Amino acid sequence: MSDPFSYKNKKVISIGVMKELTGLSERQIRYYEERKLIFPERSAGGSRKFSFSDVELLMDIANKIEDGVQTYEIRQEMIRKQKEQNEQVVRQKMIQGQINAQFGIRK
Amino acid sequence: MSDPFSYKNKKVISIGVMKELTGLSERQIRYYEERKLIFPERSAGGSRKFSFSDVELLMDIANKIEDGVQTYEIRQEMIRKQKEQNEQVVRQKMIQGQINAQFGIRK
DNA sequence: CGTGTAAGGAATTCTGACACG
DNA sequence: CGTGTAAGGAATTCTGACACG
Image (cartoon, rainbow over all chains, first blue to last red; front, side, top):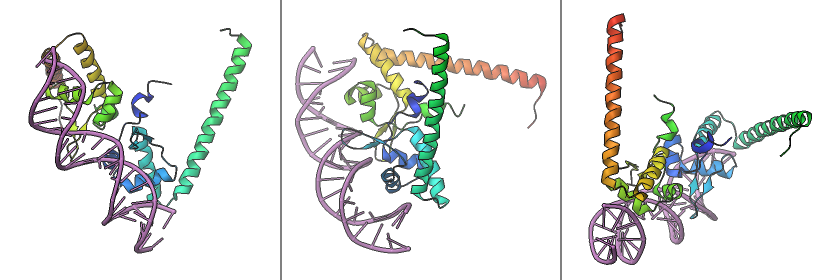
């Protein structure tokens, strides 16, 4: 839960490089951020910084847009998937909690 | 020989981000390039673009410099290691060539 | 709704040089 | 040798707005 993330999720890519990597225009990238589909970090001066996983996400988004899906629908789908994941995590934690209760743990 | 490279060796990081990631000054980073220790790519406009492996390399370099090693020596060491690797590849290819000769291959 | 564009300004990066040592 | 810095310019990025549809 710490190392695989180091490169793929590190926000280090400028919008100019994103443009080349995704083939999208800066306008499109900024618009998808405005619609809350992507969440770049910001430098001290205000420039956007993206990760490699943002590159993948952006290409998925671009495909859906091409298929006529609206940004609002894409966002709803993302929220739904996120919710599913959270529930999965909660289930896991409950199971782990039962295991701990059964076999005891002390710090 | 294609996928593991995709993130780690992709040159996408600006010098400003490198500065934060490595803790080095822009002056130091540019100087190490001048001494041929690192090889950033350039954008169309001339800005340097680094990879995550450059981040690691740069931190190794910084450690050596702190230990009093000179850039020239670091470079010699890099060249030596590179040469060793090349020889290893050549040996591998020769072995593979013999295998192919023994068992035959046709395209 | 999604995207292009011109506008003006601010942040980022570049190079070559002087300085210290 | 390795690094800081001020200098001037060019490339990069930012936002808000108008346009089309």
